[in-house]
Amino acid sequence: MSELDWFKSSYSGSEGDDCVEIAHASGGVRVRDSKEADGPSFAVTSAAWGDFIGFVGD
Image (cartoon, rainbow, N blue to C red; front, side):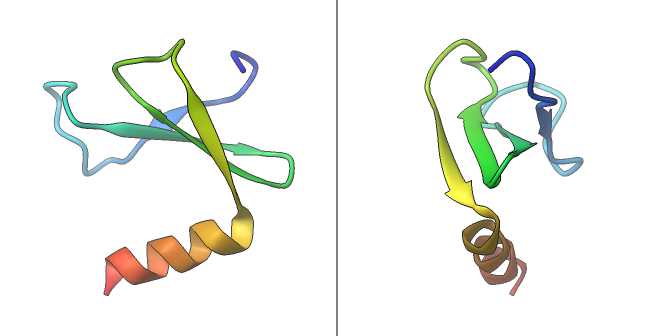
């Protein structure tokens, strides 16, 4: 998964703790813990990610 362009939210702090990173991938979005770049990640569909972002934005 190193070929993905991972990024974290601009709202994340600079200390590097408690952050998630996302990467847009074919068919959806990948999510991982920023402290574990080589650790596990999971995938969600673009529609599910949009629903999630809409929910947390409210």
